[in-house]
Length: 335
Image (cartoon, rainbow, N blue to C red; front, side):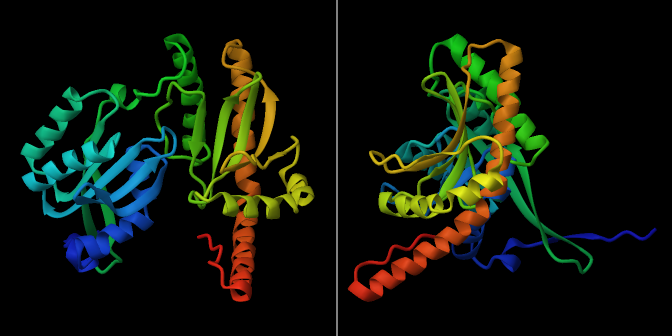
């Protein structure tokens, strides 16, 4: 048997500049880091303002709402970037900090481990080495290797505990089982840690426009939903109204379970959801049934809506451009 030889490739051979090439590439491929962190990340901004400085990438963990600051560096880590990640996290109020470099110095690994052990609960720091390899004349392949990470106990703690400790623990246990099955069996999410909260958001094919979610809603109900929020109420309603006009076909494709169309006129967002009775205080057997129901409906939402949103976005953008040509008002474009 013949074996190929692994060869290291300098990052600059693939990405000419850290700020000009690597950071934009990573921002467009956040799933690479999401998997390493065990989170579903949604991009907030590139070169985000942090006082008089700029953080390379600012994202949000959809499952907790925490800001995630990602700082990239070619070569070996240095004291300057260590100071930068601390500064950015404090200015932006980040809950997660990720330091990516070609090599993490032993002293900086020690520093990140020390901070993870001694800083307040809810702030998590990761150090990740990135490299590129080839096997003989193969295409280059990137490798991200986690060098430092918070402990499992730190990962499972957030500042926003809902309800008393007993209720929070019930939510954590319920959602831990839910996300574990969604991640390992269905490849639906990168999330790894259940949280003591009554909801969980998941990334979609276009999380800037919509995302999937399941929650324990008011009135003793459990909900699985598509949550529409691109940051603009008019755009959200334009997309919702277009999908609503197709509701019969969407319902037939979705199958069992009546979809509720909630325009939420008093809010910025819109919602398309399916409900069932239930709350967190029922016995474990019923909770298992609720978890199964939530997983099945999240999967059916994912099977039904991506192509619908793609078509709706195209239609809304065409309509916006037409309106712009007619009245020269700013076009209603969504990405």
